[in-house]
Image 1: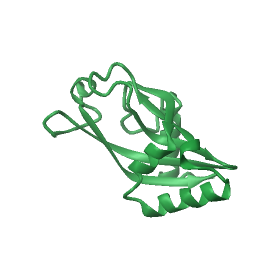
Image 2: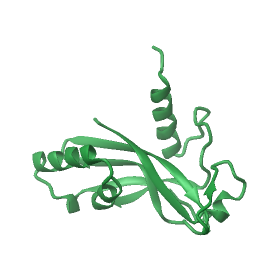
Image 3: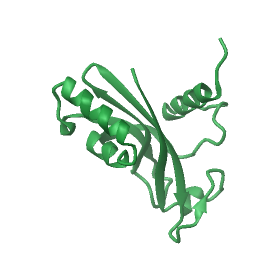
Length: 142
């Protein structure tokens, strides 16, 4: 069985989220823990630029007879090594909605207090990163 680039990227993201060292990840982001709870409402707020994702989640909530406030997802957490972002959450997110599981992968962009973009490989990323923006949402249901 051959793995496509997207499947390799998904596998790398899952391994990284689980805290496993990954030879597949191009540039693993240091100082991220395996998880923390994130309300679905927060995930949906981040997903506003992706109306198809929001619509699919709403449909699944109706099917499961749930309200968005009743669903808690998991995501990665910035460790205390991140001087300005410690404790904040970021993707990938996993949400159990009824009998379905939603996995949402995101790409992160880090900036300093002046809005300058930082590279994941920067040696002082953990000290300088003041903001993180998530984009390029990719999702699937299981």
